[in-house]
Image 1: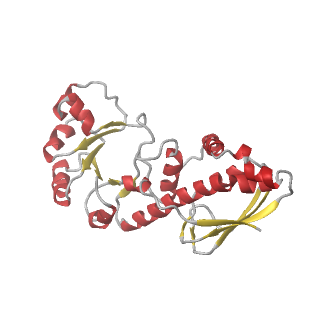
Image 2 (image 1 turned 30 degrees about the horizontal axis):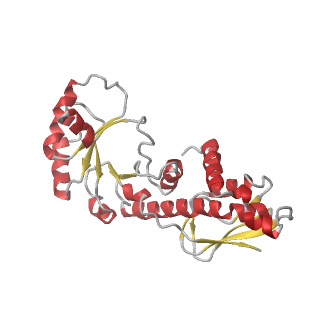
Image 3 (image 1 turned 30 degrees about the vertical axis):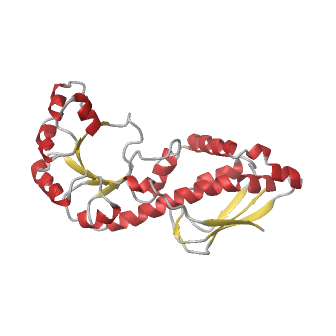
Length: 276
């Protein structure tokens, strides 16, 4: 996944401003604004996979551009409980005013990558690709999709402009799926996907030559029936399933499973950050 440094800096600046780092009353009270550099150590308080090193470093660098870091682990690697992951040097201003913002990014993103690794493992041995969704927190979509990709998940659409996707509410708005035949605005070469809620929608949808049919909230038995009807005339994506069902679907002839839970209900990975 391409690293968008300008976007990362923009998001970090917004997060730091939200935290009021320029007017840290504690630093003013303790008269720490002009002190020399100090050291701090980042330690994992549980197992997981690291995600968000760039965000972590850039948070401190935006306050003290001479901040330096020495990592004992690479981005995306697994770490153990009580493992020291990094030691850094920076001004007390950077360490104390940037700590919470830096950890918020690292904990949140590592939580998503750790969950993504867990779910990807459930599909091991199959040809099915796990997809993320647009069910992300406002203004944090890039961070969340970066974290899922680092966990082995394939990014689906970043925005509404990335692909032509007709979902259930689009079909309800136009009346019925057969009315899509009258549309002439589908450009050749556009990625085209149609969401299906019932088996009897499949044949009318196939007449539009979609790249992908998305089977939403289908039972396993109906997924098997849909596979036969589609008969390799389009790629098949399945959504609306629970994470616990991933293993039971790995032997079916489907291409993708999209899972909103990858970026919802995230359990942040716990780290400690201690000045030495």
